[in-house]
Amino acid sequence: MSTITTLNFEVPATPSSWTVPLARDLYHGSTPRPRTLLPVGSAYLAHARRTIHKRTLQEDFDELREQQRQLDENRANGAFNEEDDLGVGDEEETPELLGRDAKEWKGQDHYAVLGLSKFRYKATQEQIKIAHRKKVLKHHPDKKAGGGDSNNDQFFKCIQKAMEILSNPEKRRQFDSVDPYFASLEDEIDASDLAKHGFFAAFGPVFERHARFSKRSPVPLLGTISDTKAEVEEFYDFWYNFDSWRSFEYHDKEVNEGSDRYLPICLRGHWHFRMTVHVHSRDDKRFTEKKNKSERARRKKEDNTRLRSLVDLALSVDPRIKRIKQEEKEERERKKNKAKPNAKLAAANAAKKARRAEKNAAAS
Image (cartoon, rainbow, N blue to C red; front, side, top):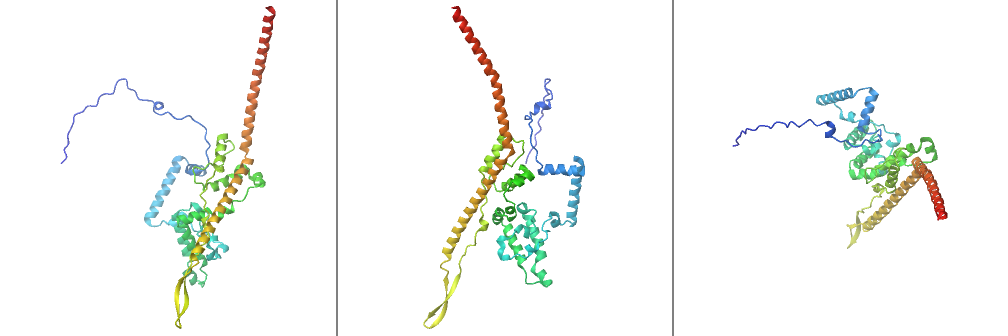
């Protein structure tokens, strides 16, 4: 059993010399310096929301708290529809998408099939499950049979294949590596794009799309016209040594595993069927794997070459390079002009010393 012991202890009085420390003595902040704020992130979205709705910080906080209260109340009453809340899987299918052949599944856009085109690689597993459930309910063969169309289940097979790919992290990463939507945006930038949109508007989105393939982070983006020389050099050094995780395995051809065969054999006048193994299956598998490896290496090399050409083009037309060179030229001119008066003064002093030496020599 525990016991309690009471001790008589008096707290000593505060020394008469003690004073309350000032706030500036408790915290020493870093030296202020200018920073570039980008219009991204939750803080910016909150600022934009308050600006649009003309709310103060307290009013915006009260509104969010009320929305959360109503959401919790709907959940408790069973009136909350999680599918509608996430807003996924409601995209309408195009005739081309509905007419796809399920056997050509490698050429389909799995995100578009599930109605996740606006989310793509940012879609969560929960959103993928909800989108799949919606599509299955809409395109299930039993539902089509009730409408008189019981033979065409190709799109339903496309839905199942899309779910198989996107629900598997490894297969999804392989598909994201060659996402046809982003591949269609990787067109070369020409002079008309620069003249119409400007350097940063033309190149910025391209580098942002490629940034997600980097093995290293953080990834320096294009920046602004006011970047320093060190920041510009850091950007180009990173992209000239870009290390991508793209593997292009998604385009691999299927390996033929071979199959068992039953061949007829005549024994003592009676025909029998005996199982034999496809003897070429192992060689076929080695050949296909070797070819796939070679194709992956070729695509990887082409991707690296294309990205390097993009960086070369950006460097050749970057207005910051021209600005930095101009600033360095002006600095050299300034130093040169500053050195001229000093040179004239030194020459004058030397001439004066020479004349003095001549006078001294003549006097002696």
